[in-house]
Length: 411
Image 1 (cartoon, rainbow, N blue to C red):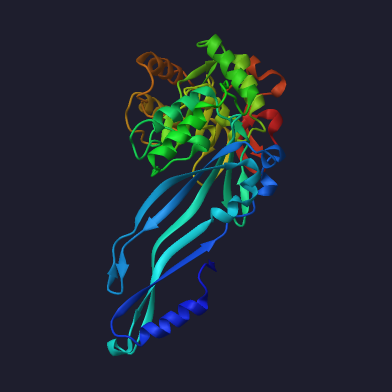
Image 2 (image 1 turned 90 degrees about the horizontal axis):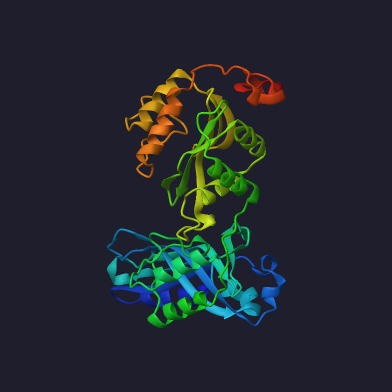
């Protein structure tokens, strides 16, 4: 850490205090600077005299303490705000440290046990997210990591997001982002003066009206075509069930039924897909992105599965340790557990991909999923025209491990 007060001064004060009776607290503070910003900012912003809005999300720890004990730590997330010109952003890391702390050296004098010093940390603040919002609506989200910045895709705040954030800030709440995402997905207590909050609202209100954009246009187009056709009961049909995570809360998307060709398209388009590609499914099919309540940056995928009527299951799963795409086949245990989940019973075994009677589903949606899952055979799926030239759906070695997949993917 880089101390902001010289060690020589601290030592001199400690020597003086030790010679005095009683306990004397000497304030201390330390900080670690944030990484350099300039290499990560667009050139047109760094050369601009236009005002930008800067939001910072911090994790804070606070407690009361003395030589005789401490109160429990109080943890909180806070959001800071500042305004400055684009050309001054390259020096922002000097004003916003990655880490800072305040405390005291409790010094007791020689008459009280020979003298000594006990360091006490009373508060700390760690930068989690730095968000830069420009007047043309660009959101630049940076997160410090090991002396460098991790930067996400530069997004544009669409009109519904802007309106939702403005509406939240207009309330008197000290936690306006409790139920919606702030710019770049920031969240936490907002302890701003009234004039600062008003100035922030005015800045956001000047942003242009922008239509929602998606990270993966192909996925969004696929979802919209599937929504329009709403296929069910056809030969080789399937249903997509998805569970997203927002601030560790599950967001369950409505079931999306596919015909045979759409199921095959989903399989092809997800062969090389990454997690952010799967997030696009939720932005187009639920999850609150289009309404403006949630930011793309704050959405994660827990599971997204296309379940075929013959039992084949193309799944992207995040079990907390590993994120992976795999092809499974419905077993008897999975089928029984899935039926139990749909009707609201606690499954006796894992019903991966099937949520437990989601409250967000209508009774008609519950009935359709129940009917679909009930009709799935438990065991290997026979070859079907839906497989095209891919061969039979078989259990074979893939990458050194046995798995259910199409025959042409076997080792």
